[in-house]
Image (cartoon, rainbow, N blue to C red; front, side, top):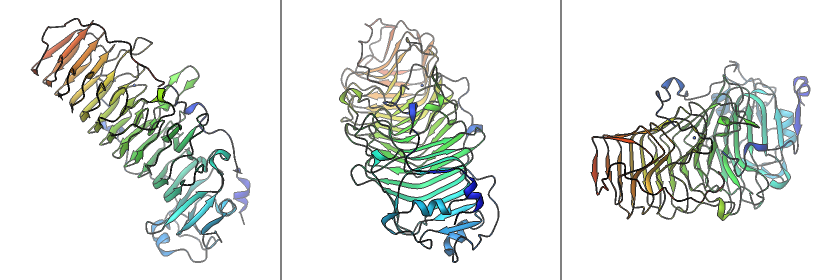
Length: 505
């Protein structure tokens, strides 16, 4: 039976409220500077988001008479009560939903343990709880299946106003056609979500709706969230509108994504730029996002996108070796890492591979005109897809920032023909230092500067079949360069690049 404390709390269940609202469009319109100082290590995330109010208590025996010893050993010092859902009568074959069991058992300072089994779950809305968790053990085979089709539920589970939450070791089975919905964690305190996995594609055929695998917000600016080893490789459908992971505009704290694997989504892999948006009608809370390690493969629009001040992407692998799914042919826009808004962001020690069959897109690293100034450092980019720019920072004429970009020890290789290794426009003061550009495809240019004054290319090597450095209404200082096959006329005036196909952002 629920306690008086449980009865007192607001607890809603069933289909409720809207999902992402304006947070994800196709996926909403969605950004670097040679920052005088790139993001400092003071903004480096901690390894864990440790709850600050977790009690040191031995679990009571009121929730379950015989807590599993391994669960007690792992979590007994944190939670006052442990509920074994099997002991509570959960159907472990998935025939009967466990919604009522969860609503009866959930409370502050309580851990819900999901032993090996298949659990059916409807649309749950859990609000206002502190220091609680849903977990299984590493040796368990724990699977949760939606009890109703995705079109009938706004979310599978929504944790709202949660704090000190732990989600760990749960598999989500979305393999049945039309079944699957978002796990939404909207926290006002610390949380950890780790070892979560989606099997099957999101039911994203209806492009009028927003389809997201996971949403994570930390809405208190002093709190942290850690999302670790979340895996969703099956993505969405061709013609669908699915997003792997979404971070909403209300995110105000610090979020760290560590060693996640997100692949084959038609509308962004990790969509984490919304908190940085600051436009009329869309005010983001500018919460920091750090991405550490992980693989992001064959996602449309962007594999990883950030947009809030001080956000960073480190040690990440991005690979596109086939055409990703997309909502429509016109919305195919393959991009590796997208910098959308704000500035003082850092991409470091990353590997981005764009294969020859990747499909059309605007850049292995791509900047929105509204993005300010940030740094790409110690990063390797390989482009084999013809006409595909490795770096695309073009056209700030529609209200962009015109702030500088810094590229330090960036390597660009590959056999792509046509286009350029780097296309820079409206970015005064942009600098390339200690870079190596070796592109063997025919008619491939090195760095193109348009409407950009006081730029610099220094201590670098450029080996391309076209013009090494081309300028159009731009000025570039060249210092200590090694150039092969150059078209060597200083500040040669070439025709402006042609108008380009510009799909939705």
